[in-house]
Image 1 (cartoon, rainbow, N blue to C red):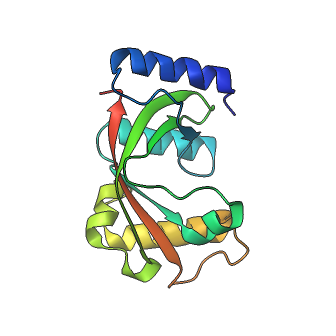
Image 2: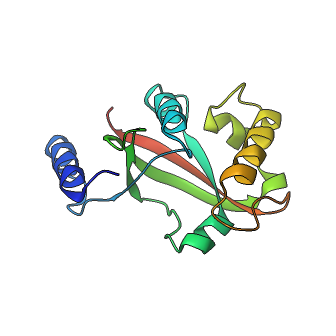
Length: 153
């Protein structure tokens, strides 16, 4: 994991380019559950293909991590834990897994960008990597998040 000094240095670099950003270094995280998955999803973000993500509400309940909110800034890490991008959350909506929309699946930018692909891949993901013992259920609450890339632009 990236140390706080590296995150602060990265944030200071980003703020030098955009001084309107908040002074406090935002939270940092990586997409996915493995270094390769983090790198592949980050590549989609940097290419402008991935503009959304989904998280299990149950995972947030289990870890106690704060849920995403509109206006939140996040430092996105690559698979090695290095800071690579800054995202701003632009929309958050919680829905049951089986009510995630085609539009959201497309915004996630993965696979063929269909809802069918999204459902199959995310069910596999939560069955294998959920941080909550409940794992996966078809009506589990999903936090659908949309974001924009603040850095690099």
